[in-house]
Length: 121
Length: 106
Image (cartoon, rainbow over all chains, first blue to last red; front, side, top):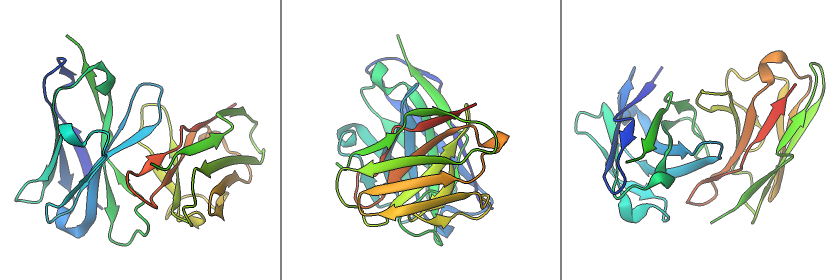
């Protein structure tokens, strides 16, 4: 059973770059259809940030695309999220999740526990 | 972007009650609709995919229906562990979007 675990700084200053990684254990990313980053601002709904395939192909939310880089490392054991020029509006819990090969219609059946990132001076 | 709305935003119910939550898409999404359950401080868990298919491990008291723009999640007999927030998600087109959630409270 694949497991996902997010990690990274909990506090980022405005205008700086938010960098998170998601470790994949129990299997490699190559066994998954693809992985995603999703965030949830305090008291708000979920927001899809972007997707990355084992090949490295990416798809981003257009509302965030200009600030995003999502990638998979060559060992296929972790993925990363970089978001530049952050503001307090980027304060959220950041989740990585995955769609298994057997899941239809882009639903996400495996989730990390999430990591809270606060943007503040 | 496809906008997702849910109603109600919150509801109060008792153990044993039948609960229905509605999700509406701003345009037709066929059956590309999924439901998640989320408890405070935890990650969402997939309950139902493709509008009506129970995800492995989800209790059979959960069911989903609908197609096009209108969808429902039904809990046939609410259990103590079901008190949580339920969110819908469309995957018909990117950007994937989620509903704002429905909080089910005692």
